[in-house]
Image (cartoon, rainbow, N blue to C red; front, side, top):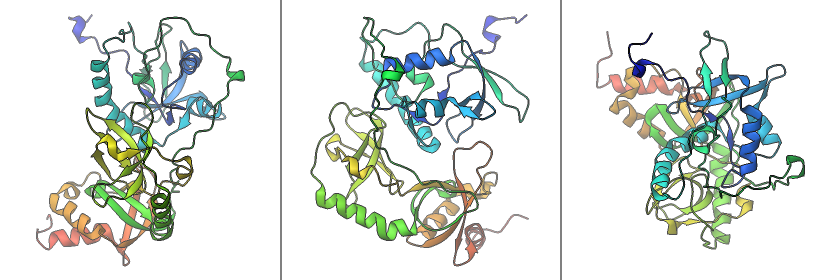
Length: 364
């Protein structure tokens, strides 16, 4: 017996389904009903994807042989859109603060009795986990998926059978799929946190396709405000403060008087007033996003890479230089992509350590 009820460990935890986002700005009630009908009171195998910051993204397997995930079912049925894991992790982080603010601003929304959680049992190392959803679960967007759901009317709604549903195809930014072992000529377009988090552009994109895209946007740009409420996940055009260039972006956070935008072709972000964020024509959604976040491989456990001096050296080295990038396999279940970088034939890790040890003696 536990001496106190407070010492009983938690038996349920909230999770986000991996690699899916709403087919539009909100999740339709009929889609939530489908999710509940499919998952509630059933047992599944699952993988918990341990990201850099977000630790509760889950991949649910409806079948193991052949492998079939619940995410793939939602996407193939037109009930959800695909989202890359790094982008999903970033949105989850940014949504947490805005969701709390949204609840404070909408007192008319009655709190529900229970929230949708997935109970996960422990498993031996290397074995898949088992996830069970209780029968009285209420599937909420803020604990199961990646966007906040609006309050629905109290009156019952008629749910159209999925076989009769029509789901328009909504274009979205497509990311580059870098295969482990592949080699690419790249530029570093943005450094977020030294060797641990930076954005790269393919040289061919930065030299040719990106200038053509920006010129096309500039020539055809007619400032049109986004219709409706600005919410995280909205694709848009935004005016970059530094040089006033109109760029493709995604809204990742909304505050009282500003929005946080992530520039998909450069990998950087900033806060802007809503007046600097505009509707994006669909034809500019078809070109792939030209910036991809990476981390340098084999630096995780060495405290040297976290030194401010090393971060500054890396930032200076990254400016307007061409690198050869070798894509490495992901480390464990991390959401980050990893790479080795070479400049003039030299491994960046070696160049950075050499620069550091010119001023600081190496460890003995």
